[in-house]
Image (cartoon, rainbow, N blue to C red; front, side):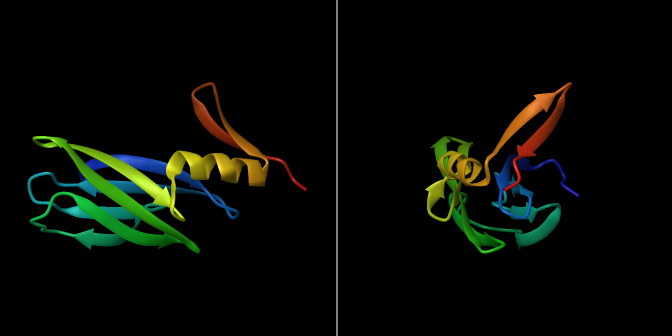
Length: 115
């Protein structure tokens, strides 16, 4: 289970389902942990370099988490999927899958039209 260092999460829509990606970043130790659908797929417990990229796959999609410094001990985290920024990838997937996300009474739902 996450131990409080989760700094970013993304919900990535693919053909089979929406996958949840969680990223932990220990800003003093450089620790990096990536989980996909609550399953740990990458762990680096001690890194001297606090910024950089971590590459991994979700299904057949190539993903990269980018860690960039914004200042002293401030970081920005972004996700690329198949070489595209997350928001652009998500827009394209939603068009391809004829789907959208909505919130009803505080619950997030994803609506997918069948073919």
